[in-house]
Length: 144
Image (cartoon, rainbow, N blue to C red):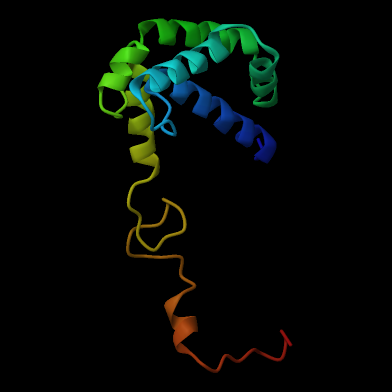
């Protein structure tokens, strides 16, 4: 399976909408009522059938009705918008946010000099230091 940048972008758009609905909207810094209304609007965007949500899901490679049904259950089980806002800007803990946070921590572990996680912390990629320390690099005649 190859990487599809367009699909990845739409998956991120969907993930942001889910986060807004379940954890609260981070960009809203005004009064409490505005924050509650923003969370309610994010939840309506997901729960109520609409063209925009269908477009995002379709471009993310997902069936909008299946996604909507699963998220409706998660939203029903999530804390109310008022409870989220009462957490002083911190997202309320729910199953979805805990799983996502765990996954994020695993994905972004502190890594050493390796390019990917397959390399040991101190082994690097093998292309660094010796080439940088040699000011005069010579090539064999076969390569020239």
